[in-house]
Image (cartoon, rainbow, N blue to C red; front, side, top):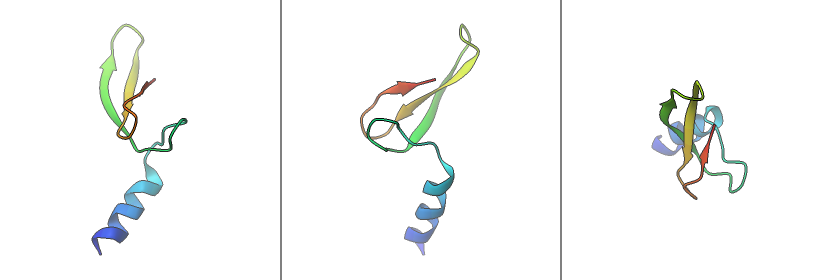
Length: 47
């Protein structure tokens, strides 16, 4: 059951363009007015 819920969560989250890892929101960039996301696998930050 836990794996099924993780699979559902994975369907709706953002994915890294480089490695395909799950992205999590890191912070809101006030200077750029956008959310900054960080990849859980490679650690790269994306806007």
